[in-house]
Image (tube, rainbow, N blue to C red; front, side, top):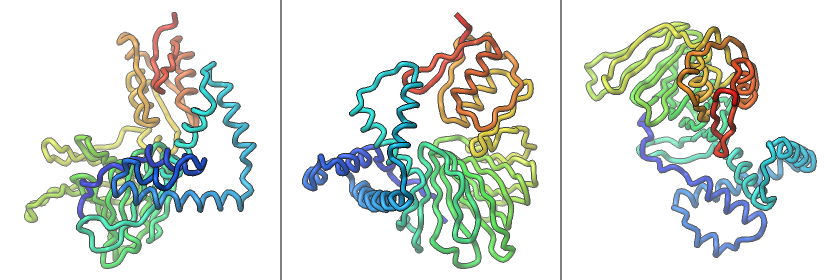
Length: 337
């Protein structure tokens, strides 16, 4: 299966705005045509509109309480540290966020360039997707900003998928049909096991951490006579370094490698610098430490299912620091003033 490196990012923000304006009847068909939508974006807009209608039908059948949802939103606004937003602007932003959340677990059909079978694309945008079952019964979880490509049915002698980002696979065993993942410049082959793959575009490596079973990691190369592979057992980590093409095998010492999925964080005498790095990775946010002398402050604790805001407040209280919540959603840890 070929890598999918030529797909242009979809302009979800523009699509969300048009869908909102269409819902409010503040835009005409002629005005939609005048929008700067590329051909792929127009296709996605049409598909998203169909999905939106299906979701509306679903919630109406489930007797979804709009009043209750709005009350919860209002409560969050009241707790927003006194920040004031224009109501109409807030509604527009909320609409975009809602559509983005819907699209974050959107599965749609498409023909990948060079592919000979109909493919599907599973996307997790701003939030992780906790569980999705593939046609063979394999269950996959996607971290945010991740795409998974897979066929409608696994025909032939293998089960092949491709990933851009980070995902956790619990592969359904089938000794006659290996499960193969293309991840950046690496290929992962298994029969039945559970493991985590980190292969975000633009990074300098691919990481595979095995939880159960056995995994074979191979560096993809045009030289078919070249054999460069690792066999990983439970607790092993395999790393492919792009700069050198070297595959490294080591024991996984990161207790939080699945925290993006479980939201369960454990720190045992961990430096503040390492704690912040972990929180940034898990919650996909920016956290600055204002003073380098704070880097080596040590922290021990466990945080299960909490927001990053709550965790930072607890850390600040423990280490006698304070948290500055930035307007852009980032944070600063500094000494108490």
